[in-house]
Length: 424
Figure 1 (spheres, rainbow, N blue to C red):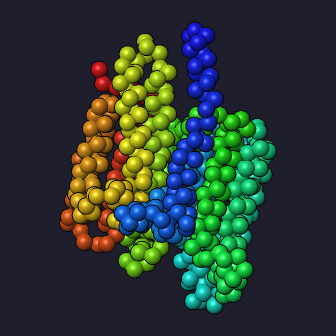
Figure 2 (tube, rainbow, N blue to C red):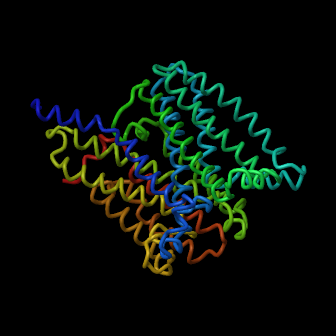
């Protein structure tokens, strides 16, 4: 590589692409929900408010906060295999706590527990207290283990700042439910309930970002990197990932069939069955991103068609991130529902959704040469998933089907780099 090309690469790496991504996604959502801006939006965008408003659930803001936390949890989990001399149990606990926050963001678990607590104990905090105590203990041990890593002090500082930000969110929620506080704030400062909810949701996004930056620093030995991969886990570094996803699928299906709230609950709060498929497709996005970069760097002697394969993985990364958003919106807000002028009935047709997704998955897998040998069995399995919704009427079937599609897709694409040499 000549000096000019080296300088070009250095300039490219110096750009903080992960920070740019944070801004490009977060800023439009924050401005859209800003009360003064929202009140002046064109009528067509106000009509589409369900997909963008932070006071609603199962939409873009919900996905963004949840996926930031999930990305952080996966970085901590990956770290347990990259730094084998560290305390694995403590880091596993930290990953579980962060993943729990991600799941709660989608499923509104703490809200449901607080409602039950109020019915049973006349206090919304009684049932939440044991979870808080256990979570805090696990968090302390996890942070202690993180601080002993290379560059761990800087990483721990960001993670602590993120959790303190979430603690501030808890304080906000407590004050919002206080009978006198909202009236006092409105009379004193002119702050309405809409302003309070907006500030609370923005605080959650900031807290999730700080936690993700901290976990990324822990994975990167305390050093910042400009590339987007700085905040993305490498699924190939995690052994037995398919087994973990299979266990997650079983839990997901149990929730879909036996613990899913009633339809009325799902219209006003989050959907616990929406988290798993969205999380799996995000993992696939991270995998496709790293495969794209590994194919670009592959020597010509190893992979003659590396340019084509790199392009396919790049397309797949975009496809998987759209699926991560779309499957969270499934049966509520489909991703295209936010586009003005698009008729809802077409995009709410489950057969159309599944045909588009499955055709893309199978086509890309064939293009990459992943349908040889035993993997070909995933094709009929994927094609049979829509039949579940035709022949079974249980209300948990659509949610279970989403999880099955994401798991089978992961089985097709989650392979080490050396195995994806492509078809010749």
